[in-house]
Length: 590
Image 1 (cartoon, rainbow, N blue to C red):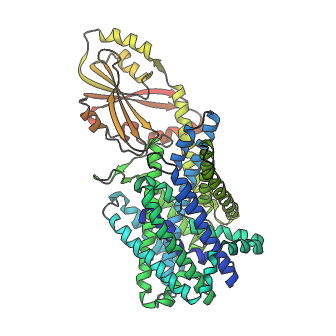
Image 2: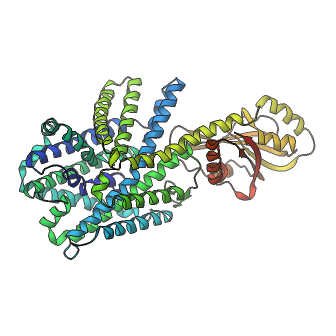
Image 3: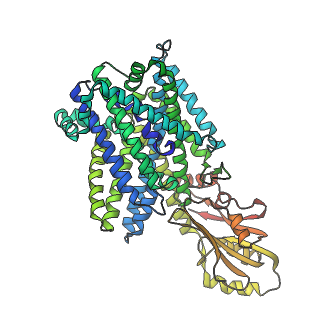
């Protein structure tokens, strides 16, 4: 509940409040808006993610990268595969763009509830922002310690949170039962018809109700499709009850400015402070879920070789999925603080929120239609078309937010997108410039060299991508420097398209004294190379690997070279034993 529903579960704190900043709080408007909110949850979360998208997985794993792998495997045209890759890169980047706004808007909106506490009425905006920044700093600072010890509390806290939302919603509904008319989608459609452009613009705020919905699909691999669907049924009911209750309260108190907190203060004043603390805890959990999600997305990006090999720390001995990526953590904290200082209030941040998430949802919808069309599954394809139409409507409405702050989410999203494009193209260019020797030619020279008596005792490992093409550093080491061991092993680590599973095995020997060992791993696996080698009985004396010294006058490739120097090498990422490493430098001109 904390991992998957933290973000969407804290949307009631600010969604209805933001929608009615510009709309008149009339019964007709309230019922129309609530109808749109409820049916947005039905279409974009229940249908798009819980029903359609969750039928697409690789060994139970979901997310944008999984959709890309599934779709690319069904296409034969290289141009279409390239288009799918670009779409997935944009989707990942947009998710990160909105991911930064999630903690900022959630924490700010919860802390803003303090103004209703007697004696805190005159708390300044600067103080609210400062408290929010302190909470964010503490949250990001503890990431390096791992969340394993505190994660056990997330579920119970969120269960109490959803119970509180349900009960307060029921209390509100009892005061104005006519609000139940909002369950009929007719009132939502009529709201859009009667309000025209103003109603269309209101969709830009109504989408806040579904932010975090993509977590159902993205976290499928951690928890499984069945429990997520079952839990969503409970969460959906809690959210709908609370939104209806807030709407009923707004009908009887049209002057309300901060609807959820004023409703709680009105119906249960004695419990208001505990509820405020509960809401802050819920927003911290939502933010934690976002941070963990970002780490997971970047790790997928690293292992599928679309992102540089950022330094990754493993914070748990028991749970390998508990990872910490320092560079991502501090970038997110910087961006969150920047958002808080720039926008100052949750209502202002709402003007920036939604564009990136609707962009991600639209890309997901397009890929879903494409996959089910290729698979000739018309029912799911039609479902994909229906939800993508709704996605496009919301995306169109959110484009009007660009001048009002949504450009910030695009700026933030552009950073990972630029890194992905620079890294993938740079690696391709680097590969083209590297000198390789055909295996047949290499074996001819190796046989001649190996027959000489000058062999070093022990086993040497040589890292390479594909045994059919021998990289220049191996040629340098063996033939130019005359370094040859009695037992030479070519080691390849291959990332599979499915998320889980690790196997290590010897392939057919190439020649006497020259063996091939291959490790195949799912892209979500943390590979313990040293353990795999021990199990295979390989006791290496030295591990050779290639390093590139890039020289270039091109400013783009200079940036690529800087990123390559600043990030760990392949060898460090896979934690090879340091005492055995021997890097061989090759100069390459890009």
